[in-house]
Length: 263
Image 1 (cartoon, one colour):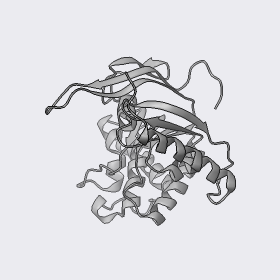
Image 2 (cartoon, rainbow, N blue to C red):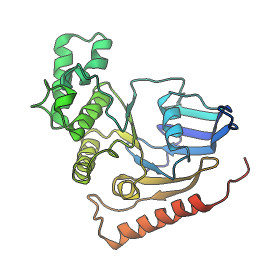
Image 3 (cartoon, rainbow, N blue to C red):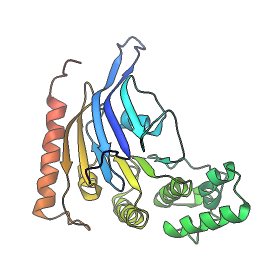
């Protein structure tokens, strides 16, 4: 990370409240959260359920508005969704009636790009994610890992400068998940795309991230930012890797046993 005055993402003193419903009081999902993400970084956000990880991602995506503070992308306030911020969910959220190629090119078609241009771009991203032989398959004919590759390609093909990933590999088996970790890092090296990844997996966070953001619940807040200063590819059996894992795990364990703080 470089010390730039203008980061790609700037979250400043952000709070998010949800109104009372179903007999419950209001939910204070985030409390004065501040975060900077520099171009080309991979930042992983970890924490127990209810710590506001997904709420933070939704604010960055523009799906929700802040209750207080500011969220900016490339120096401009985030006021709604935009193609420059692509979102990949736990489920790939593909159109089941469209082929892999047409799912990737959906945003390009909505922008009314010429057919030849769409074909060239979708071919490029099919090859990038290793699916150049599967472009005509429907999602039902693709494995879970392949569907997530299509979702990644769709976001990148649409011009995303920032990928927001909400537990994208949580539903995959361990072997496929490991393969997707390698694929994500390869795509990151090739494109330099900035990534913010929400995960429950401490292993995944330490394996992928330049920085790990550890959050606590009640209300959601950042406890610590941990710089992962380990060379890639990372050896998950090394002492340094496991020292970082233990540190992050100790933070999360403490967050789960600490009483709520006053807001």
